Image 1 (tube, rainbow, N blue to C red):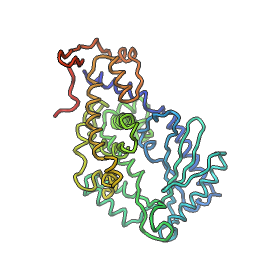
Image 2 (tube, one colour):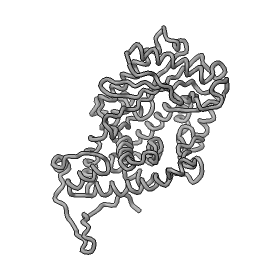
Image 3 (cartoon, rainbow, N blue to C red):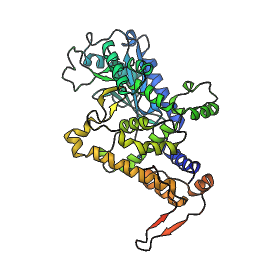
Image 4 (cartoon, rainbow, N blue to C red):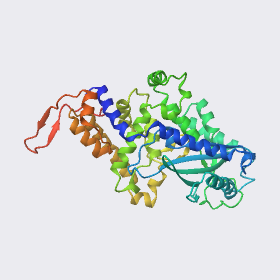
Length: 401
């Protein structure tokens, strides 16, 4: 099958699992509204220059529809108090309470009926209007200069960024609250380190390897430069690849969610594997052919590219991780994804493609529309006399051995 046809199949699948741009725009309005509230002069946080920004899949443009359409989306914010709050002036508990007071006043002002909930690292609001969201607000402060320099040097040594990108990313590192830490209620310089905005910048740098894709997107969007567009409008092959893999993962582990690969590992390894391929089919081929070889044999197994000392796969070696066979399930899932996408994109039978897309990805395709779009002819079928198993030929190998 030609690349064009394979891409058409993947695009049809994506059309059923991705959320519309209007959902991203709704999420953006939510965080801007909260940012305006916490930044008003009457706010308890006003004097500390609060900066609100989106993190996670909404920031990266890799959100997919939940399998349960009634399930709320996760909308994660960072609330960074950029001046006047330090590890020597506030405990983690005090910082969290300070931000929490404004989250609660926002809840009341906006008439949100559900009570505010404290989570390990954040405050949660259940927000429902056109779309249902979990709004998780993580309090944080800028990390100390010496820690940023350490992380910058580590990124350069690890090869996850050149010097210019490493400097930009490291400067975005923050310390976050975590009520599980023993020093949560006392003044201490030992806070958890995070960098969701830096990770987004690193992911964007990987997406920008697809130079020819951006030329096309700028023309379609009538924009002067790609940074004028929010990431969800980039629709790069890397983003599309991550979305499809996450949905395949969700279907595969629907009955055993505690054992499924976490999204940050999928996203990180896919981004590392990606080399600027110009379309989803090539990106998927590259990622599925390379991703397994990017796992380190020793800790950190899957390093955080913007803090290489952190291991995204640290739970693999825990008693719970071993019980849930997290590493084994990840490896088995990649092998299954390889086989499934080879099967789907090499078939010439639109009914078969639609059935497989539904079974493997929960994607309800219209066979007639698919046939019209990709121009697939009638399938060539071989029947094995021994097993009576029907297979289709020719089957294009997904990745070269």
